Length: 267
Length: 207
Image (spheres, each protein chain N blue to C red):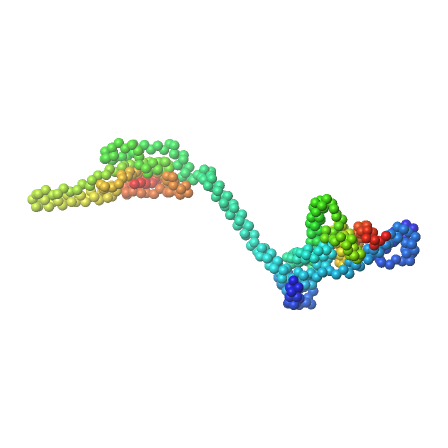
């Protein structure tokens, strides 16, 4: 009996809709198999009904698919990764810029000139009073309390700077020739020519040293300094700018270069 | 929409219709839009029918059909021609149906929680069985039981018993052997009948 029950289950699971005679006879006498058989018949009817049920037509037009494909293709163009990469790059650049603004130069490695300048900054105390002021300049300037502005700048920033000369010109009235005294015509002519030559020479000299004429606004000091041939920064200017010393001044200053030093003058 | 369908049918045929699916797929892989359109027109309705049997909602089924073809055309380079194009397409459709069923189940669970487990067994869009005819009740009982099945069982019932696909095709779609498919179909039928029996008894279809 149980064998026929299992036989019926296998038969139904195979999808058969009709039963052999032996199984039909078994169903007539087995309540459990009768229930299984009725359920199977109901299942088959439901399946037939479901298969016959009309499926609505798909009304999705090709144009909609095509448009979606085109839209997606645009969003996945070959260099589509470039846009987010640029965005990230910009963000990183902004962060770096903000960081540089908050911590400007304190953590940056010093250049050679900067490190030299810092190393010598404390010990560089050039006595401007012992520099090679001429007696004439000393007499002209009198008691000068402070060195010039440019000399300060050089002292602070340039390593191993030696102030060779320093002076502050004093404004003075250019000597004007006095009106010629009444002399004999010959002597008077010769004296006038000699006086005019002297005046011209003084004017050229004044112009050459840049001595301001009477009526100028300020008196400007000048200094002549000697410094080694290493890069350096000047004053509080931009840290990224470095200067190389150059030979500057009259030809008589060139002998200073022979000691591997350059001479600069500031006016 | 009907006008769009008519336009589809009118302008379809820019590509040779005697080409096989695989030949069309090769053309479509190279960017031939006409080949894509021909493939779409060939399989729009079969895919829709299977999806509709799973969702029982035409709008939702159309959304899934759209996703199926978008995914298929975008991943044509992965189609190795080791199986038929239709099989490959049906596999995509079934996977998307599974995803959608999971979403629907989560939504249904939320709805059930909100409704304090009322109408838990009923299809959300189902009409009141008392107000329907006997035939409709029969249909509703059938699909209610079908929707109560796990997705893998439901797909097998749809493919084998409703679409009447042969075991070989189902095995190719599911990527398994014919013997495994037969075993799974048998288990799916048992589970389906277990769900269906009380519903049919409730409507007097069986004693």
